[in-house]
Length: 136
Image (cartoon, one colour):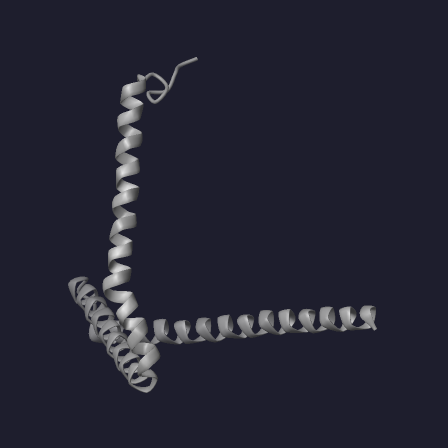
């Protein structure tokens, strides 16, 4: 039976490993607190004080990010297809197939979410009704 490398280490070596892990955790904790104080808290205060303006900024930023994502995704995909020396008709066929497949996948997933939420709502209503009948 062989001992693992971890079990053969001396106490001081183990202590150094644990200390580095502990220091890493403390560093990440401090970094998170600093980010929270410098970025999240002022954004939260702004959102509470200026609800309409924050909503507008959020919608515009989300739209820009979504458009940039789509443009970058299409650019990199086209670049990959052109690098593979595919013809324009092949690229167009692949794009159409993938988009139709993605649309139907999204639609099916949304239907499943609606179904699961509907079942959860029905179960909660039945539970509420049973509790109501029990206590009456």
